[in-house]
Image (cartoon, rainbow, N blue to C red; front, top):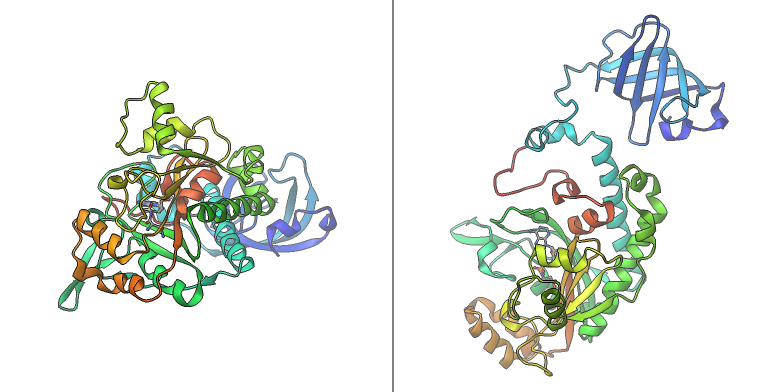
Length: 419
Ligand code: NSS
């Protein structure tokens, strides 16, 4: 039986069989205390006899009777009648207070920790909830390519590789392909890995991350933000409903998450610069908001916010120029509260062939590499918008993690792709 199930008054005095791995073991004169974990919970088991070959992380099957005990870590204990070691374990290399680097070296073993298990369960809810929301809103899920021929978010962070006798790249974003799909499906989304050869070492960048992207025909920048705030609020609500236990284990302040409801406040980039300058941050109009500036801006917030209309040269070639101020574009970044910063990058797309060509020239892109993309403006162009959300950024914020590495199973960074 699953351990979570046997932790119930219903089973007091009854015989159960559980199986799992030894989480902790303590031997006393005439008793052995074994805490067993499985994917659902932990339970303390007490054996009057020594259990041969029992050691930390060995796999075990235990038969015995359930008893209630306030002192036990999860409130119940099993009086062991039979204990069988299935797979023995060598001396487990992970002990208390080990360095981050060592834990990354043994990531395949550290993934068994209760912290990472809790995070993975939250991430699973997040992924499922995104799909639930899109299905309810009649979006179509599509599968864009990962092997691509050009850049979406600028060349400096592209991973390239030999593709038969040509050079190809790993996708940074499915956006351009999603744009092509709105002409048949109108509202589409995809969930794919994205790759960025980020040379900077920060708490919120990894080289391989999961990217949730949406693209909508007949949608302007404001409509785009409405979709995002509804979507993010729904997902947070689902996690609070489904993962209370995990959030408590991670010591997350659930009351803050409960307050995440639309609408999210909109600030223009100009306003943010002014607010930051008043706080004494050294930043000028035209400079990007980095992690430090975003942290300063969001550290006392409880709900995400949008920052809209960034300067044109700082953003991507496909964004539509703001008709009210052509130095800026119709875009929005959603920033997570509590200092977490950028969660979503979004914009209304340039839908005129002529203006898109001008943008491409300004950004130094070769038209021949994007002829197919320009075709989308040549055959029934339509106003449209879309967004991209970093799944691990969302996990980081919801779980209250201080580093993105723990929001994924095997974080890929500039100096690590093993194990
Ligand atoms: O570069 S973005 O801001 N925007 C795009 O890629 C658009 N083409 C998406 C679209 O409109 N379809 O990246 C989107 C999000 C960003 O807000 C982060 O949350 C996340 O992707 N992101 C990352 N997460 C983890 N690690 C890295 N390196 C990373 N880069 C972006």
